[in-house]
Image (cartoon, rainbow, N blue to C red):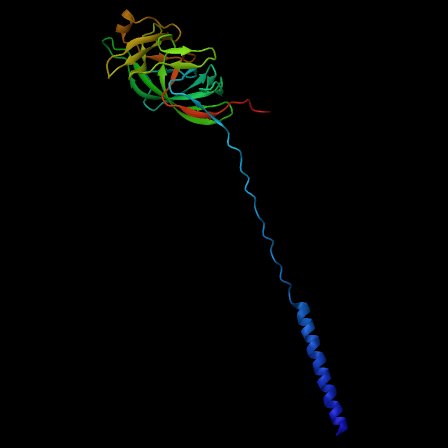
Length: 240
């Protein structure tokens, strides 16, 4: 009887040991829980560049890069001009340097007609691209740069007089197919208001009756009147 009791006790002890051993093995096999680290991203706020305003009425001095003619031009055609003098803000800071590109668009074309009607080209200017590639939309109109319509101060800031509802256009009239600046008021006929443009351009008078097409040649210089103020950062030369 005693031996049977000892055997049962031994069996119970072995069962307990086996149970504890199995629990230990399971504990070792259990995969540890890996907690992911939470990364806190810091928002870097870039400093905003200060903007300078180029006032309404400022005139850009530009030179034609392409040649256009009332004989071949179509509404919607674009062309480019190059800024020949720096454009300053109202506070005297250069924002548009020499060498910038101003893009123009043909708004209307009237080819020369028999009977003495010269060709006409109406344009507007839609954007300026700086040498760095920065592009800015503008609202610009054609104008001349003589003393009657524009003034330039000691800092080369060209500012035009009020447009007074006159539409400045290119009108045929050069002896070699040049162009002159004319004003169309209320849809009326063009009238000479500015200096002659283009190499070989002649006076109106008898030439006006020949019905020549308006040809604005590459290299022709004129002014762009800013119809609406624009704000841009101060120009600085790119660092190589």
